Image 1 (cartoon, helix red, strand yellow):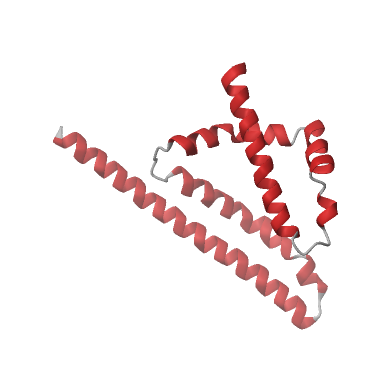
Image 2: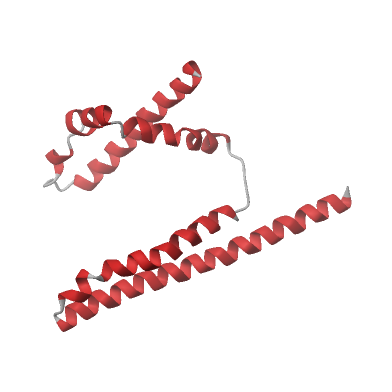
Length: 152
């Protein structure tokens, strides 16, 4: 029993070290990405050359591959944990996406019930947008839980 516990601890310790390494690479790549975009934008502003500002998105495409790979590796090597509610919400996330992004439902939610264009010039646009998004998420979450409970 003691050797099993020691082996499990060593495995978890190795996984945690890998996780920290990938997270460091993620932070480094994000820093390089942000700095390179900032430098390109600053050069364009200082030199009055639009070529730097217009082509700064190329840096996002090139460096974005590394950032996404490091995000994936950071989460893959993350030590696992269990939380009942987080797992329930995570299991329903794909269903929530499919419900609210359905062309028929999308039209009803974002144009009839919650028309976003009515708040563009409002001072509270960001607050209204966040609250509406949370409400839609909760309603779709409940619909997905009902679907999982009674239809499957």
